[in-house]
Amino acid sequence: MNKKIMGSILAALMIAGTTSFSAFATTANGSVVIGSKSFDLAYANDTVNLTEIMNAIIQGGSIYVKDFSGNWIDNATGKSVDASIIPDENEGQVDTVSTVDIILKDTDKPLIATGAGDAANNELWVKYSDGREELLVTCSEGDETKDIIAGICNPKLTQDKKKIYFMSEAWTTSAAIHVVDIESKNQQFVCPGNYLKIIEAGQYSGDLIVNQHRYHGAPNYGSYDDYYIVDENGVQIEDLGDDPAVLGEY
Image (cartoon, rainbow, N blue to C red; front, side, top):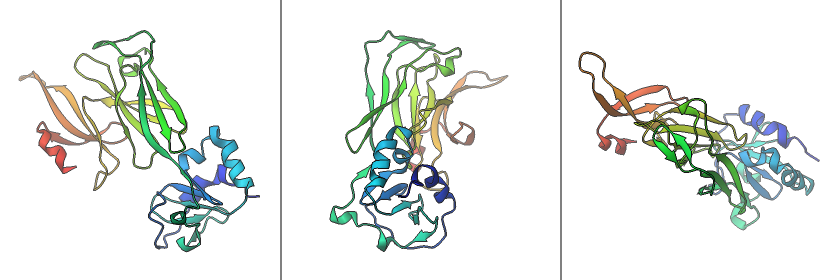
């Protein structure tokens, strides 16, 4: 019985070969096939789903990982393999379990005080293709404004389906952008922002576009609101100016 799956999937991805071959288009990158079933990697590596994954392993069959470049890897050897040996889900042999939706749920809990006033005490949930729903983020007060979670809105799932960026009420002039890791449930502040978009292709693929309220220094003073490209940690990469038409380029 191959019990390597829980500890070696990510390692296998890291040592994937560079051999190029055609993979099944209907199996998403970042998936693992166990026997005749396919799972999203984040789902397979979540200890909450350990029983389900171990049951799939016990039922038998080889384990193959499709990395985020589309290459298939034999989990037992860590070596690249041809896609032709993978069970063909086009014939209905594979049931893929992956993140398919993000849900914001209202609650009856008291409102949360923020710099912008009292905000909704809602929750961020993720829904999987097998119908299961999982709570990721609840609203909470914070010692600093940036750490407050309240009025969660505009959630965005990353392309690898590992993280969700979202906005939260924060300051009088600006909301705050946060990110939560789906597997670990760890949540952290990224940067201030009144707009949020994940860039899906090109030079800045995976980076964010945010709109930030800033202030001129002396002698002009006053404020302005520009769009910026920032990395996953909120560090500025490019200033795109204040014209929203630029968003169409990304």
